[in-house]
View 1: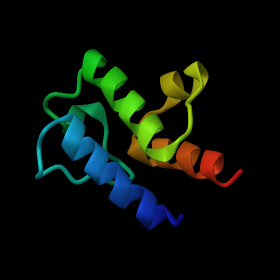
View 2 (view 1 turned 120 degrees about the vertical axis):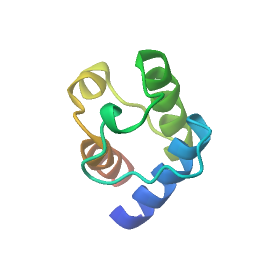
View 3 (view 1 turned 135 degrees about the vertical axis):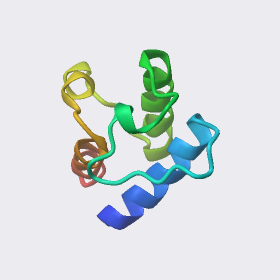
Length: 81
């Protein structure tokens, strides 16, 4: 899976979790950029991303992610294994 494909899939997941078809994520997207992205929605988002990609984040990975680009980096490293 290419990085572009990961972002295309992440766009779908974000749009579904936040119920907003206008969301388009990129490398720099953070919780500050999406109105409804709070701590509860973050848990829902992580669960949805894990399910979509068939992988699990560690707690350390979840707490150190600063933006969607870092999330994509972790996904790429996990699905490449």
